[in-house]
Image (cartoon, rainbow, N blue to C red; front, side):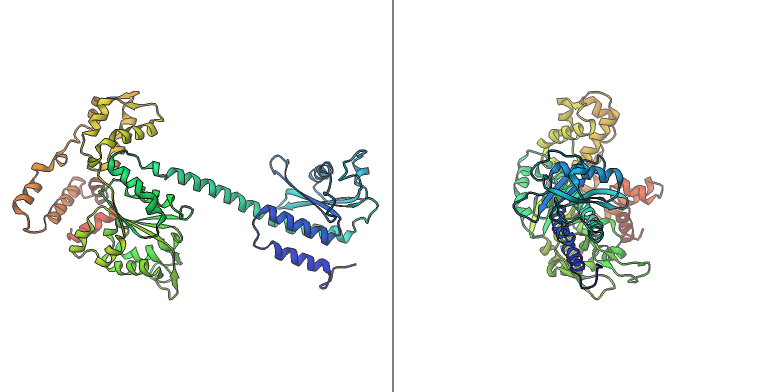
Amino acid sequence: MTITDQSPELDGLHDLSRSLTGVFRVDVILNIVLDSCLKICGAQRGAILLFDERSADVVRTILRSRDPKNKGIDHQLNLLVAGWVLRNKKTYITDDILRDHELSDPTSSGRNLGPSIGLPLQIAGRLIGIIHLANMRGGDRFTNQQVQLGTIVASLAAQFIDRAKLHETLFENNERLMNTLRDQWSIDHIQGESRVIREIKEKIPLLASSTSTILVTGETGTGKELFSRVVHYTGPRSSQPFVAVNCAAIPATLFESELFGHEKGAFTGAIQAQRGKFELADGGTLFLDEISEMPLELQPKLLRAIEDRRYFRLGSVREVTLDVRIIAASSKNIEDEVHSERFLRPLYHRLNVLPVNIPPLRDRKDDIPLLANSFLMELSSGKVSFDKAALNYLSNRKWIGNIRELRNVVERASIIIRKSSINRDDLAAILVGEERDEYNITDSLANRKMRVGGGTGNILEKYEKQLIEMAIQQSDGNVAEAARLLGIGRLAMRRRMDKYHM
């Protein structure tokens, strides 16, 4: 007897292949394979055993019988056949399984078994399990053709089982990662007990459940991105991507490509197609940091993408649809940018659906001891602490750089001060020279200028230009170092220099 195009065995193999396509759960695959194997090979009972590849222990077993009154194959017999296949790395065939293994007192599910085959589930030289088929004692022995068909089924099944195991592992790892991220970016990660922080934390569940755009404002270093991540990982999009874009760090000429992507050949240097940040964030959240630095000419395209939920890649005629939640942030007053015609009013209103302002550290001084202790515990693994005077000293500083500056100071202290308890004098010693005029600007030249000469020219631009000149001079013309001194990115520094023709 041979397998022809019209044979039921071949139809069975085709049906099995179709049934397994698109299935990624191991238990479902095992049941489909065993049911098919009983039919294709004409077996009365069957079992599949999967091994732990490191220990060779049996980690999964399923049983099947064509007679619903019977339970399948005795587990002891399954283990004996599995052991034989593991040792010999080939198919096991017998006309009398009880005689082969000298079982004089088998259980009821093995007492009447005779002919048996054990088919290795093998892929790339790895033995991941066996298929064990058996007939009743005195019944038909398995023919060469049935063994051949079983071998084909086992080979096909091994591939689908191995793929499903990998899928399950990836899924489990992803679930663990997502649980870790949810823990890392939980509401409790926003530390503070001041009234303003409590109010912000109370808003987060409501904000997280919405899909409306959020505009987060606040000075540099207040934790706008932290807040945005907490909103994302608290909401229903937590299993989807959170993609952060620093608008101040992208050159104007590359901005559209970065956000919307491009096709191959769309511009010089576009040697292959590239997905933009919008596509990467599809289904999740796109965080646009320092949105006020976005080039004015690109703002209408961003507005359209947010409103219509679709856009075109550079060089493409195919429209891309998207499902992205937008959270934008700015350390500048965007209303001032709108009045100065550097930011589109319609875009501002589209972003400002759910406004949130993160207060500067000076407006939440009661939180400084809590933050400082938390940072120190993390950085020193709980081996170092601040005394009360040190915490009072930290609480009374201005913290122009807000939480970021506080953390940097605590990190410096944890490295430099080799004591289990850090006091005020220790902190004063490492911060000497940092109590500069910017911490007390009330008598500064800039403040006097605002009081006396307000309204006579753009004071902000004048002093911004002077600060840039001073930073460049102090860094001996090194733009990257000058940018570091000013606390901004190199590309943002270049844009400001271009603005003032420097």
